[in-house]
Length: 575
Image 1: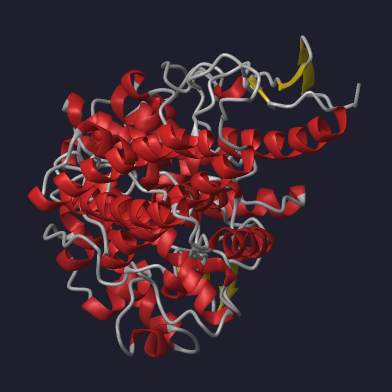
Image 2: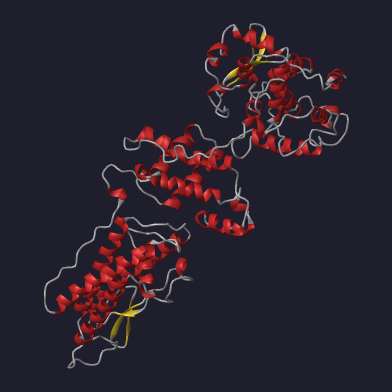
């Protein structure tokens, strides 16, 4: 018997037998890919089994694609090109089936009884004519029966289309019409073949966008983009965010040449995001669902959608791939996400409130400032004031400098420098573990006199004597590559314990307190923005270097908080 892993024999006839792959076994319609090869000849069986195995594997793969597509959002309409492709492809498919049937041969009265039913030529002619007449009947009346609908669903899954049509789409009738026209055309040609005429089966070219000369598949571009960014500017958290959401985008709209994506693709992604809740993959009701399935399920369950701000942030993650690709490839001329951002009327200031006077008093009278049990048990009252800890200094520095959390916790000892007799914080990203929000964030901030009164100069001296690279070595870096992440979680818990936590208060509130204090002191807007690292035309040139540091220092000295009393900190330091 010839050797092939799927070749088997039942009696004297050879059969194809293949187990259904595990990944599709639960959904594939047959328990086994078993069928007769309709031959008793070993050599002929070996030829047929190779072809049959390839066809079965193709059906397995088609089923996998069908499963993947089932989780994707349906399209509302089909293009004229898609409808024409459906008709031409189905027409060619029917003629190809006819070719195969004629190659297998018809049953003749003088032939021995077949193991399986084989039509006679007369039966086949009669069936073909009836099939064609039914199609003409439906075509003439513009009707669609269940068979046509099932055929539309099948053809839409074929390579070259690979789409799922929305149940309420008006294009179902157009798609059924395309299939019906293909049947009428094919049966007309099959009738000619039945008369002995020569009708060739056409080759229908399957559109392959990625095959265009010079085109670059988005999936390949994505890998190159991630590889380069991961080696240069991205920390693990940034890499994870960009990787995950760009893959979700490709899963939703498909992988094709990077320059062929349109705003329609970006809008589809935007719509999907608008249906998802924040942290959707942590929702019990959405756990285990793919992104392409989760949006529609979340809408059906009535889950609260993520914020518009978060949607814009995610779209920026994906859009940045095109901004990078535009610099790498001639054919990429922009991002499909351009101008698709959701307008948010709320001012940035309105997203967070400054701390009230009472909240500031609660914060700076907490055990960590009045005396705690230990550096670990900072929430319990005691006698230790941990003036060597970043948890003690970081809030104070932000209150008296307007600096961001991430800028403060990543400070190196060498970033606190003296120039023109003025001690200053140099907000830089010179170290591999240092990052700034934007170009305007690179700046210098004089150290406020109150910080000096509280002993900041002594802390700096200790760090220099210890040879410490970082100003706050006790503040560890998070798993995402940011020093700010662990501190942010700590401070959120801290605010809750001192009863200063609301929906609009966070560490960032200190920056708003500083901004209000600057206004109260009459600090010019451009000076205030220079201190906080806000971008304004001409500001960087005026306050970036040279003698202007003294101007910043003069204005910063005017900033105060008369509503809070920090004298207990000074007494604690002297004790």
